[in-house]
Length: 383
Image 1 (cartoon, helix red, strand yellow):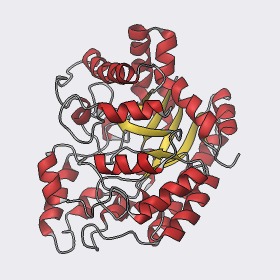
Image 2 (tube, rainbow, N blue to C red; image 1 turned 30 degrees about the vertical axis):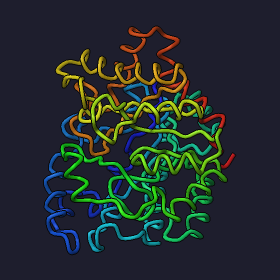
Image 3 (cartoon, helix red, strand yellow; image 1 turned 45 degrees about the vertical axis):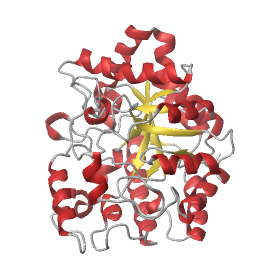
Image 4 (cartoon, rainbow, N blue to C red; image 1 turned 30 degrees about the horizontal axis):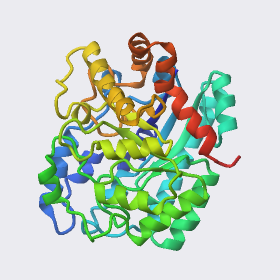
């Protein structure tokens, strides 16, 4: 069984006018038509990779791939870009309403799936365990981009508490563009880091703004895991400095920095996540996983080699098997995925390949046990 730390089930539930990212970014960013042009090109590269071009993260595919649980990513792309505002504008309060509306749509969809005995939304470890024992896929809310959580420190504090009660397990403070919460690393595939930094510069001298610090405090208070994915080095250091030394953090969908991409985790960051008892989800995005020495896979076996390169790096740097997870990022604008890992239905084949490579006990840690242990010990939900 695989537990996927980061997959975008809600993306195909977005309202049609909010789902067609390509159609949206044809309009120029306010005051910056060239940024809109870059996003127009970008959006043409990103679409679903499921069978026949359908979504890669569906209940049918999760069950086919024998995925026991999935951290289901809530994200409103139009709110993050918000082309009606200048680049880098601070968050708006309405984003939180849009986030809650998306949660409602996901929960309504999963209520129907639960009636069929196929999947259900869970809000705490006890419900997660019960769902998996019943043979249903356990869905757990998580959020990518704290820009959606609040427009003031008071809103951040109040809204994080609300999200925790609704079962949110983690929040990624940063994402693709700077929005006044946390500085981010370049993370648009095929856009070189130098060009990203020119087009989308970070603002200020601090890795986290006061808004980001408020979000971090509220997450710790409500036992919502901090996800440092997408942060730049300055924001990562700022986060570690503010947290108690034993507070766990995660990196939900990453590769190791075996090349030069700043999005990928440095050894120092890998080591600190391990020291804190966190986990790192190995991504199946070809662009990040193959940055540096790994050749572009042409076969499934070569894709497994790439995944294992990052698993082995995490194990080597941390000195432990306990910090590896799988965080696919499927349907998260990652096309092309590693060969034959294009959708959740492939996950059972990945698990079998990891069992063949590492043996059943070690592979089980990487595929599910490490992440489940962290969720059971830290995530509170409403339990």
